[in-house]
Image (tube, rainbow, N blue to C red; front, side, top):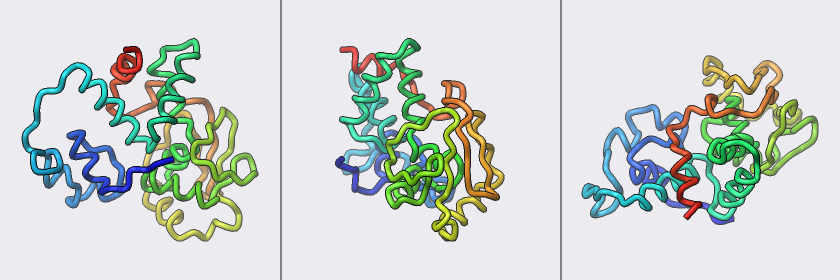
Length: 208
């Protein structure tokens, strides 16, 4: 799947808000939004009013970038959410939150979703005792995610654990930093998701 390979801070500047794509840098004075709160490029400071379609498109793109998901896969998730009985927009966010790379990030083992995706790709984690190297793997209630035994000396993971020790754990997850593991208690609900996403705009975008 194609990945965005340009400077990630440009994404935040394009959307006009922090998407927390670069971990601790986003909380420091080096954050591009804090230094240059306008769009990238020669015409970045000229913010034109968006049309209804443009607003919906930007919301969809912003959400994709939050979770690091490609267009084709994002559309697949939307179709999955549409086939569920609940509210489509909320079901979509629940599916996105259920991705293994997002869960690794939410548990505090990675400083960003991008780093979590890299860890999973490099087979740093087990799911229910079995190696899993698929970032898009969708977890289920009861699943246990743990750092693989042979990877427990990973310096980056240890540093993240130390840095995130005081960070609150989402209500739908349990974590055990002593054993470098976490458990999915239940799937995330809309109330659990702290991202400034207006999911109804995404539904409207795909409903055209």
